[in-house]
Length: 429
Image (cartoon, rainbow, N blue to C red; front, side, top):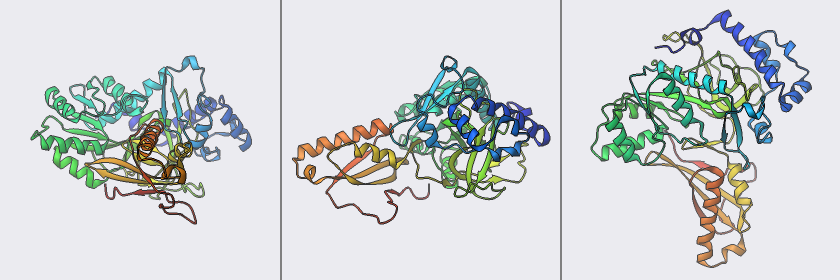
C-alpha cells in the first residue's frame, strides 16, 4: 500500500542529504521574495551558510501576519504568468492570505494526496465522494486531483444537501468519503433517521477541524468504516502535509516535501521527540510560494517510536492552538476578524462575545453584539435591519454563517486584563 515507496520510506543519511539539497533550493526560491531578502539580510544568513539540515534553526520564522502584509502577491517567488491557480485563506483583519501554485506545485500536491489515500487502502477500483467545499477552500480541489491521479472514480459532491449526499453514496456505491468529522456525524444521523445503511462505505478521511478518539470510535461504529485523520494548511499546498496510516497512531508527515520542527511557542526553542509544542514547517518542494520556518500555531509533538507500516516521522493528533484562531466547520476564524467587521458599523458598541456550540454534530457560532446607546433607543424594525446587516457583513468576511444577537449597552462582561471574548462550548468532540 505505497504510492511512492522510495520517498515514503526514505530514512537516515539519504533523507538528510535530500532534505539539505531541497532546503538550499527552497532558500534560493525564497531569496527572490522581498520579505525574505530583508529577513535573511537582517539575520546575516545566505544560502552558502546552509550546509546541513540542522542549519535550519539559523533561519528566521515566518508568521501568518507576515503573509497578510504581503497581500496579494508579495510572497510569490515566480512571475504571475507561471501561477496557474490561486487559493485564499481567511485574513485576520479582512484581507485573506493568497496562495499561488505552479503546474509543478499542483502535480506535487496531487501526489501527496495520492500517497495518503493509497496508504489507507484505496485503489483505482474505488469510488471516492469528496464532500467538502470546492471554491477557494483547498480541501476540495486538493483531494479531488489526488484521487483522480490514483484513477479512482471521484464524486465531487461538495457540501450541503445531506439527503442527496446519502443517495449518491448508495446509488454510486461509494467506498470512501472525505469531509469534516462533524459533517460525517451529521450524515450518519440523517442516514439513521432515513433508515438507510451505507453498506458500501469502508473508509472515511476526515480533517479541517479538531476531533477526538471518542468521535473516531463513534464514526467507525455507526458507519462501519475505518476513520483516518488528515492534516494540512493552505500555506503548505493544503491538505496532504500529514496523514494517518492503518495503525491510526499519529500522522506521517512527508519529509521529502516538508522539514518539520517542534518549538516552544513562547521562546522559539527547539523541542525533542515526545515534547509538546508548536509545529513549524519549512516547505522543500514549493515553487510558487516557498515557506521558511512557518509557524503553524498548531500544538503537537513528534512520535519517536518506529511505525510498523515502514514509513517515517509522525506527529501526534493536533492538541490545540498557540494563538486564538478558531476552526468552525473547517474554516479558520480569528476574533480579530469579527472585531474588524463590528468596528466598521456605526451603530455597534465596543463589546462583543462569541459562543461556539456543536448542534446536531455541526459547529454553530453565535455572537452577542452590544449596540451603542443611540442605536438601542431606535425602532424595532431598525434593530431587525441592523441585525441582518451585521450577519451579512460577517458572512462576507468569514465566509461563514453566524447568528447575531443584539444586546443593550453595558450588558456584556468587561475585562481588566486580556479580553476573553470567545466561549467554546463544544466540549469533548
